[in-house]
Length: 233
Image (cartoon, rainbow, N blue to C red; front, side):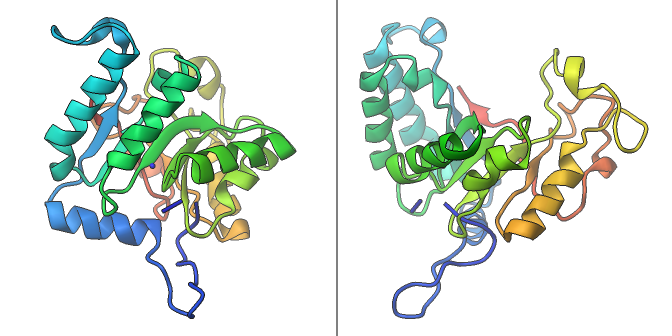
């Protein structure tokens, strides 16, 4: 999703540096020859035949996806909501799935967290320390303070939502911008937060085939990483 930090490697007790998230991601991508991000979003009502529409079915399908496609993936991205909907039992299932993911396969927990002060700090602890996320998705709607604890760790990574491709995104995201055209303010702001915090705070932008017409790819700051839609279920 190794737990949370930025583009700089964290120093180990002996003075050596642990690989950064981006370094590990690049290594994995080179090894697999792909940039595939395996999304695990198991909707109980959409599971294929042979899987029960409950938590055991969700967990079994998620494990099958991991076993079948994990070896070819550069990262795996479980969506937290599909597990936490089942309460503590669902979180336990996600923890078992996380434990089954090989150490060289980066894990992105799709949580879209962001809240004020101590709340965001506890969200960071839950995702990075509790679930062992290598990277997470965050929402900057409440401003810098809402994601500061989520992007402050130098050994983890955060993808900041800027402009999404869902049909209703324009209701708020298309209300004008710093450039005078429909383009989110969050992208340049994320860049400044990244500089200030020295953390990995990239902006997630839709891939070319899914981005809204109002968001040309040349509108995204060049030095920000992107997270496109993941393949999977």
